[in-house]
Image 1 (cartoon, rainbow, N blue to C red):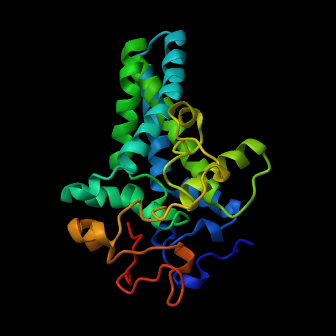
Image 2: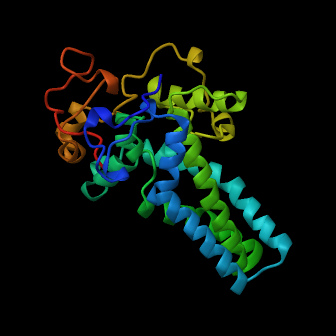
Amino acid sequence: MANSNPTAETGNEKLPFWKRSHYLDRMTLKQLIVAYFQHYTIVAYLGLTAACVVAFAFFPTTPIRAIASFAAALIVYPLVWHLLHQYVLHGQWMYKIKPLASTWKRIHYDHHQDPNHLEVLFGALHTTVPTIFLATAPVGYLIGGVGGICAAFAGGLLTTCYYEFMHCIQHLAFKPRWKWVQHMKQRHVEHHYFDEDGNYGITNYFWDRVLGTYYIKKDRPKRSPTVFNLGYDEAIAAKWPYVKDLSGGIASGHPRRRVKGKEGFDPNASKNTIAQ
């Protein structure tokens, strides 16, 4: 059962909301909704969407072109996200480049280290906003000029809000009532706790099916040994130590079992390995 007071064990209840640590496996749906609409990234996405509406008023296009631009963004977005997730977030190259190591750690390594840690679940604005714009603006411009850009960018921003909320739901300690959400959640849980090499779509697995990365647990005989560290282990860290230095060590095994005498305990990982 979810802890009704998820901050009690941290002793930091008096701190401002986002100065505390929040874990989705200890939160209720109501607590998540409150947290979601308080997070600065969601506030920023909604604010940028409003800015798109204002900009559209100054640079309008026809209703048909606006709708087509918005719809095109919804179609393009899942493919762009899938490719970025598979080849950038799960790529074995960013941690090798010192200026990019902290970005890779923040945008995905920390999330896989502890998938239920809410603070690092939301994407960082300096990486997400430019990506959303580059993924949607060109198609919007081709369809409807500057007004099309506004419509397509707004579509990408709202889709991101949907992705972020559903992503939170997939890590929340409750069983969704709807079958399609249960299916979505199960595939994502397998990505985090069984084999990270597949099910990249988060909310849409169409491209996983097309590109051959879709799976269900029974299709793969063994749990991936790198499901929590994305392949960044002690051997890799010896050659490229940037993420290890930022994290205060290398943690392994299930995040809830990383205590002395339990699976994956690493005496060198005494610092917070999932700090932003």
